[in-house]
Image (cartoon, rainbow, N blue to C red; front, side, top):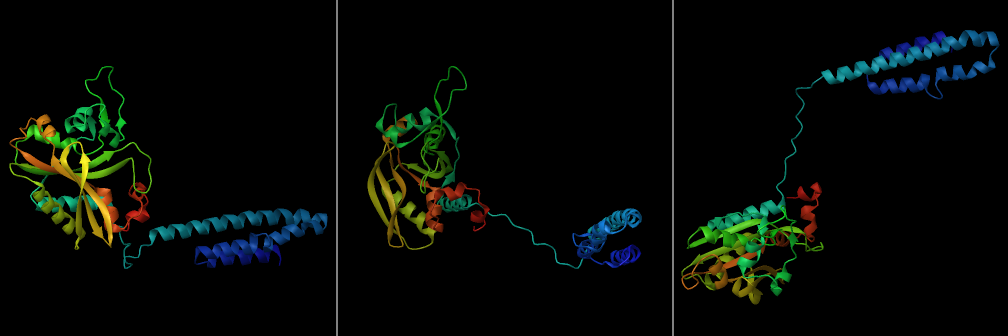
Amino acid sequence: MTLEELEKSARGAIKDATVREALEEIRIHYLGRKGELTNILRSLKELPLEERKSIGPRANALRNDLEDLLAEAAAKFGQAEEKIVDISAPGKKAVRGHIHPLSRVQAEAVKIFEGLNFSVVLGPEVESEHYNFDALNIPANHPAREMWDTFWLKPQQKVEKEKMLLRTHTSPVQVRYMEEHEPPFQIVVPGRVFRYEATDQSHEINFYQLEGLMVGRDVNLGNFKFIIEEFLRKFFGKKIDFRFRPSYFPFTEPSVEVDIKLGGKWLEVMGAGMVSPRVFEYAHYNPRDWQGFAFGVGIDRLAMIKYGIPDIRLFYSGDLRFIRQF
């Protein structure tokens, strides 16, 4: 094939191309490593000097022309693709967001307690030593402080009246609320808490709790038992067996652990008890006039049980494959 024939053939092929993919096939056929024009350029060394002087420049010029034609044709295809809009084609389905399982479980738990006439109260995550420990009957050097691995905060000023920390539980809100409100009342306190400990399948440095407090003239453990059993039955939506075991917490007396039986297995779900008279005194209540119960349940724990999640760290992984399941 002569250069003239090759040029005519290549220009015609480029002109007749109807899709972008065809241009790539044309480029390979004429300009590729084994293309028609490439073969002519490689064969120049076998021609006499005079023919090389004549054919070489023309072949190189043709190569440049064909590259330019291919680029122009590709650009036209790009413009055409951008301009064409098929208004009859179905639109792309919008990707919906997913509520995080912890947010879902917290909202569900709060809704159940609101149906039981509890009010929702919030409190600060950065807390003072007084509210986090002292006012909950856990004074300095008390052995019970070892139950909470604490994130202590560096002082922001050279002299601070109180040591500050990231709250280790939502219980400080109990005292804060009692200082400003008169009984009777019943509240729940959802929120994030922090513990300075190693992470594993069942432990994280931050997690979520739901604290509850009910105070009145004649509030007793029977009231607590009814409310908690009602809450857990509604939350899990099935028949549940309950077990109440004696325990110890500095801010309740007596104290109990609540276990439930699901799938033939006993699971610990919350700690609770009657509010200690010492806590009432810190809140300026007369413990002879008032009594109440308090409880704390882990939102993460409830979510793991309800959805069969084996590792608490999945909640904080940021993995959308996990979130999209809810």
